[in-house]
Length: 514
Image 1 (cartoon, rainbow, N blue to C red):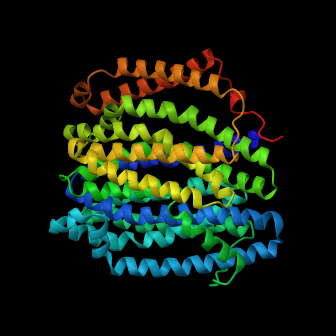
Image 2: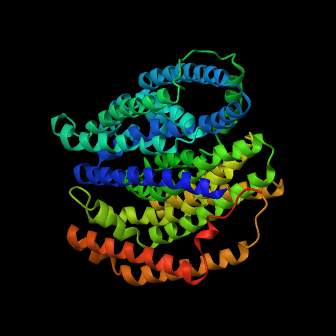
Image 3: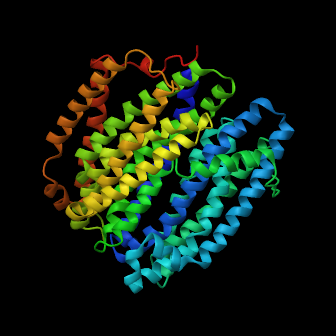
């Protein structure tokens, strides 16, 4: 029943919401202390590289390969076999990550040249990025093991633990900015140490829960284990599957490194706002449905498999479309209220608004990619999303080259959004063409209702927001108060509009099993 899915999703959304709130506080502190400066640009790159690899390997290809296999073991094997599989994965994954981490620290200058080639001609910013990358790169090892632990907990329906864990990253970086940075020769390097400390804390936090479930890994390196070989086989093509969005964002950083100082930071802060609805709802729903889809596949229940995807798509559209409207129309006021403090001035607000309004176009497609790709991964079909992902990545690069000249950093954001549209469209097409997903009745009227309520929401916000110059000239109390009033009003108008057109809770809480 989707009531269990809804309950699990609500838990993940609640915990993720807490994390995202602290994430906003973190970004506000970073904006106030460091602004959109060369130092902030350097940290953005030094953090994005291991964070990108974490999402690519740990939360991307590894999780999408590991969870379906672990679900099969859980359903079809003994507990001893499950434990042996977890032990082998822990040791093998840890060994590979340790090697990658050592190489990353040693070859940090070359890595920066690859991912931010524009920095190579700017000695001070390049050197600072290399220094911080050597501190942040071990985060890849720590957070990947954390993601491995979280995948086990999610498979056994302990969703809240993994969803709450990122709070510690935000708390660590806030503490580093406020209390550690004044004692550093280069204050912004405190953020890099905050990332490293967070990795340790996040891993230690999950260990007691694994012990309580009697699934604490006893690592052993075993590439010959059947389960390990199956996961590795699935991982290789999955590298370009669901993680294409992250590859595109890293390509954005590469192109932005050639633009004026501040461009990387403007993209970073606008991306952080885009990640809020994506992380809270899109990732939460995909995290919950993947184990369910995997179990339906193992049980050969095609109807339940399709209905689960249908339920997830409706949930995503009910959240993703209004999120895109809000971020698109309210980009300037949001950035002004949240980040316009200290070193983050009115010009930074205006420049960040340009990229956020372009990112808003891609919010719903990014969410849909998370759901649609899960359908393929649960079936252990990785070739299809890989091919689609490569096509989307190539389109992103081409669009970057075309749009960066007239629109600068905003063109980079628009290219990313358009490639997400292509990615989601192709995934949906192949799911339908292969009858892996058969839409339930009622999608036509559901679409018309969404169009109406989001039009009402957009018109209200456009009329209410007014001139951005007024926002940037006011003090922070005025900006925050008006943002709160607008946000509450927008939520009320959206919910009332849904009720008026006939959307009820049953549209989310419908049976998804036959």
